[in-house]
Picture 1: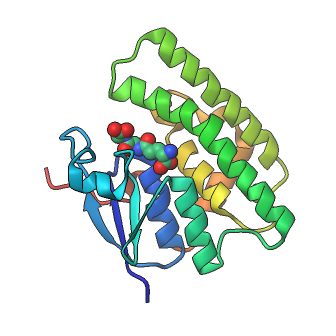
Picture 2: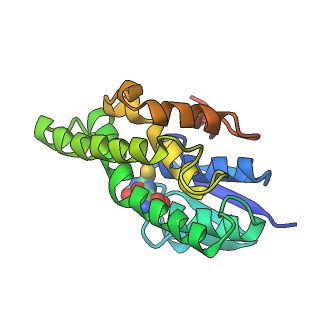
Length: 206
Ligand SMILES: N[C@@H](CCC(=O)N[C@@H](CS)C(=O)NCC(=O)O)C(=O)O
């Protein structure tokens, strides 16, 4: 049986994606909190796990993996779950996963980070928020009349987009204007093993 250790922080959306994927696949894991503000992702030991000095890192049987999208695909390959059923579906799943990393995640995560952690300038926040709203519009259109993004089952693309959409409120974006996203989020929240993204990872003792 494989062993998994997730290095992350509950504040990080990419870390939540990996925690939820492990939960949804029924894979137990050890968890190590990394305090980014204290520089714990830049120590020599941590840089051996991730040369970019970022979380999440998932160590699987001693092998560190970085980049949440790549890690989601690795777990999908190992478990045979959340990766579609045909080559065409797998291709579309990768397209959505890279789209999420390219437009949706920066739009929502950067708006959130600028608002909550960096006291960002209004024009900077407006730039990222506009991208987040554009992404949500595209996602809503894609989900209209569909249960999941690709095919009849949820995939790693749904998991990545679900986590990011769950933080739209932190970016001061209401999901009221996106009814297909709301229905899909209700379906995603009901998947066996799913947790509320904000509560998915342990918080360090105060
Ligand atoms: N593309 C990466 C992004 C990872 C990322 O941005 N991690 C942030 C936390 S959300 C981090 O570790 N920031 C610390 C730093 O960059 O120094 C992924 O999806 O895993």
